[in-house]
Image (cartoon, rainbow, N blue to C red):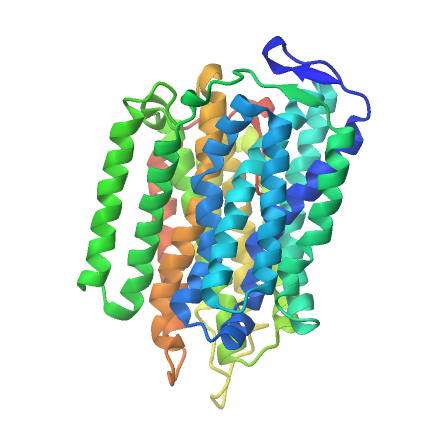
Length: 482
């Protein structure tokens, strides 16, 4: 069966089988954001990687995933959703095998970047297939399942990372994707209808320069922030990439004003709801992955926890994010986006502040992480969850219908880019506690304090930035990742 999206599409039989396979593929993408967090110390030991390289093991994936996601959506429009989906899945599966077999940091980071490229092709194309195959109430139920997969993927990623790292080894956190990817790759063409692209053959409308510029600019920004942890903020090695990032962002803005089909329309980006959504998404994702990064390294470096124990300790945290997102979805139609965002950031700030009570475990009156890190992180996670919902909902409820697709793509892009920036900042701040021969946990405490202050400032900014009023219940959504 073929579906012509330019004429609205038709209902395809067997749609729920399609949904199962697409959700399985999306599950892999989300798991790979958090699965590596628990494995970082083991990866560093086996491959002799320092703090900077470990940072890139995380950020190379989220950077390429976020920076190229809107481009992936454009390619799905031009070449067809199913074709783009299968290409992304094949690349992600091959890159996962490369990561699992890597014997050096350079190979692993390159594999993670290729995983991100595959994810950027797969995720928007999969969502396009869902919205084409399902109609009416069936579409709402399908999208609800899709959103739930994001939350469960984040939760199970930390547990899976601990189980695999403590068992067969960290490489299996990537190798496990291969049989799953091959299964989906074989089954999808059988059950998924072909989709005629809305603009077949119009490859000139794909804004490749814009996608490359925004990805390169964010990569230089992350590189400069990571370098600052060693060289200092005033060093040339820090300032030069940061300056180059600013120049590339400016060039990106200029390109977007001249191309026929821009990656991100300037008029859309200038809208207050979109600015608010970008701010909420960047900050929430940065705080989430930054806290995971700091917590994992603290537990395994300073407290001697194993990978499995770390994964089990993080499981309530990941579940709290999902619970918070569900609570946010119920509160938004009643209270509006602004009070929910302010309260959520305040909750996150309180949780991060609680986490600063951590101890090295060598003191006479050492405090257990089960009394400091775990409850603090769980409290912060309950606040982070509603922020994802608020970012998506307040944006989509306040932009014209003709700009929904672009606005959604922008918000999801900043979901991944925020993670890259958050991990880079966290890495730079905790650097003193991760250098060879370092004693004490001052760097970890400082990193957690930065997260607490950032969340507190974000609460104040949200008082003015987030649009007032209550969005329509029809617009409440949980974002692509949570």
